[in-house]
Length: 382
Image (cartoon, rainbow, N blue to C red; front, side, top):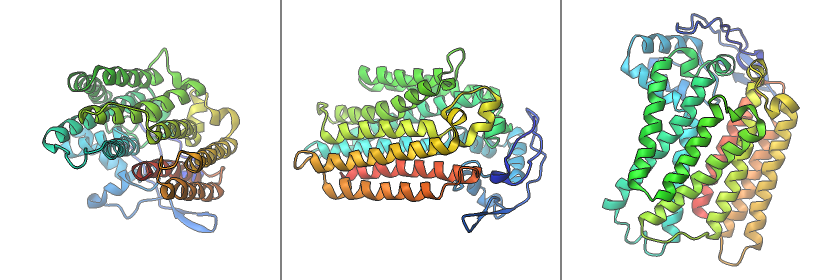
């Protein structure tokens, strides 16, 4: 199957990709001009010792075909290191970072909100349980993004050929093994170590994440259902669940504090925006596979503008919450000043967006995630 790499993103065709064979292609390093700046679209500086630059590149989707070809060959030869690298990519690192940050931020917030919790942390008891909870969350994350790659493999061969199932780094058999393991062990952990309410919330997210990709449901084919799914799982369930779990672990009853209510509301809106903007770089593959998204129906430029306006409104709402909330509810400097700064960063990156350039679209989407991460930093300070 031909891997289509649009000129703005990769500057060249990157050859053909048989279903289970290496990518026998050569991708030349080229440079494009983006608003007066040279933007390298290659990773010629990567070598074996610096292979992490492929995994941690500034824009997901930038890749060197020669390195990817080597990774595929090593993985198919049974290299443990190569397979671990493929599994890491299979888990979609940018979503892992979001899950880990949400867990740390929710934990810190719950400890700060509970008198005496920090002074008497009882780490010998609570730290192991916290780590177990983190493992369960990461397994839930891997289950959802993994099953999506299995069912979206043909779409990914067009939109995201660097993903391990689409490239052949990870066979479907191994992918299914990982998904089934994560999808079984994660719920078992929550059922055995946490309150039953959290198990029900976990399984709600597990189910929504599964039907997002699995036929005959595939809610991802409906842009409204897709947005609601991601917003519910990553916006509300994750943030509420982590905070509730920590409060339960330290023996404190849950209550809707202004900060918790704020972050649940704010991140649900933010996750909705991510649910919409994630499709901006994928319009070609989505159209080819009859996947309806707001980006394919309305256009990249309008969706980017609408998403940016929605986030600006979200930031304005956060600032207004800080201004008009009861005295002492928030620390005003991070609540007002921090959100004002993030709103400014959003506007700055939107103004640099070139909607006809795939590379620019991917950079814009990356910055949306960066702002998502930074919100969790503010959450610990407000």
